Image (cartoon, rainbow, N blue to C red; front, side, top):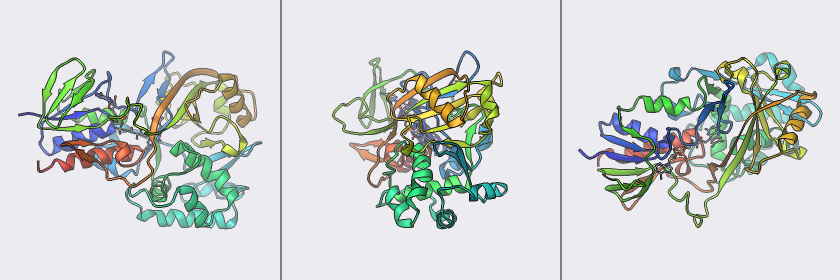
Amino acid sequence: MKPVVILGAGLAGLACAKSLSEQGKTILVLEAKPKVGGRVSSFRTEKGFLVDEGFQVLLSSYPELKTTVSLDSLHLESFNSGALIFNGERLDLLANPFRHPQKVFRTLSFPYASFKDKALVVSLLLSSQRFKTDTPLGKISTLEFLRKFGFSPGFIENFWRPFLGGVYLDSNLSIGSHYFQFLVRCFGWGKVCLPAGGMEQLPLSIAYDLPKKSIRINSPVRSWTAKEVILESGETIEASQVVCAFDEKMNSSSSGEKFRQVTTYYFTSPELAQLGWEKWLVLVPPRLGMAITHMALISSVSKAYSTSGEPLLSVSAIGSKEVKLSRVTQEVEQVAGKRLGLDWVATTQVPRALPVITGETSGFEIREGVVYCGDRYASPSINGALRSGRMAAESLRFS
Ligand SMILES: Cc1cc2nc3c(=O)[nH]c(=O)nc-3n(C[C@H](O)[C@H](O)[C@H](O)COP(=O)(O)OP(=O)(O)OC[C@H]3O[C@@H](n4cnc5c(N)ncnc54)[C@H](O)[C@@H]3O)c2cc1C
C-alpha cells in the first residue's frame, strides 16, 4: 500500500503523521535534518547545560496538546505566572493575582498600573475564557485592541509591550487581537512550562508514538507532486497523498514572506542564584533603548537544564543582529543591579523564528492535490503548528 508521505518532521508534520496513523493510514515522514522537531530543538553543551535553540515556552493549556501528546511524558516544570519588569533602576513585580495571591500587595505597588489598568487585567482574564482557538487572528492589531480596551499608555509601554513583544518577537504588537485574547487565556489560566528534557522533548514525544520506521531523517526532498516525491538523493517515492509540512518558499528569494527573528544568549554564574529572579520571566521594556528584551533563569524552572547545578540564564534580543557579548553582559548586570561575572555558554540565532501572519488563516491549503500545512497556515506558535498538522490530516480522512 502506498503511504501518505509527509514532508518535514516539525511539529506540524508530526501532528499530521500522528493523526493519520490514528486514522489507520500508512505514513512515511521525510525529514531533511538528522533529527525531528524543526524549530523546536535543543542540545546539551559539553559542560552539561541544556540549551534550547531560541528561548521558547510551552503553554500547558494549548488545546492541541491534549490530542497530540501525553503531558505526563514531558515532565513539565512551570514558571511563575507574571513577570519582573525592569524600570531603568530596579525590577517591579507584576504577578497574576489568581495564581500568586501572596504577591498581591507587591503587585498592587507596580508603579505603571493605575487602578483602572488592574481592573482591566482582571476583566481581560475573565473574558479570555471564551477564546478557545488561535483563529481567527482578529481584525485589529493587539496594540489597537489594548488602547481601545482602555489600558493606559504607561501600562502598555511597561507591561504589555515588553511581555507580548517577547512572545510575538515583535515589539509593534501587530498580530490580530483574537490571537492575543487566546494567548491571555493560555497564559492566565494555564501554566507556562518547560519540559524537563528541554523543549525538544515535545517533538520527540510525538515521534515516539508513531509506528516504527515511519520517519526517515537525513532525507531532504527536492520536488513533489500529489502522488510522487523525489529526494535530493534522486530516489523517487510513490505516495497515495502528499502533505508538505515545511515552508516550500523558504529558499525562494522572491517569496516576499517575512519572519520574526530572535537571538538568545546563555550564561552561567554562581551569582545568578542570589538574584531572587527564581521562576519569573524578566522583561526589559523597549522604551529603555536596551538591546536585550527578555530573560529567564531557566535552571531554576527545570533543574535538568544544568546537570552540574550551576545556574543557567537565557537572555533574548529580538532580531537576528548579533549584539556584542560585552554589551549583553553589561545590560544583564544593569538589570541585576550588580556585577555577576557571567560566563558565556552558547548563542543561538534564529532568523526565521516566526512567520509574519497578517490576515485570517485556514489551517491548511490544498494546491494541485498537495496538502500544505505548518504554523504559517494557522498561528505562529506551537499550538498553531499542531493544529495545522491535525487539520491537514483530517482533510485526508475520506480520501
Ligand atoms: C526561537 C523561537 C521561539 C519560539 N517561541 C515560541 C513559544 O514560546 N511558544 C510557542 O508556542 N511557539 C514558539 N515558537 C514557534 C514554534 O516553535 C513554531 O511555530 C513551530 O515549531 C513551527 O512548526 P512547523 O512544523 O510549522 O515548522 P518547522 O518547525 O519549521 O518544521 C519544518 C520541518 O521541515 C523540515 N524541512 C525543511 N525543508 C525540507 C526538505 N526539503 N525536505 C524535508 N524536510 C524539510 C525542517 O527541517 C523542519 O524539521 C518559537 C519558535 C522559535 C524558532
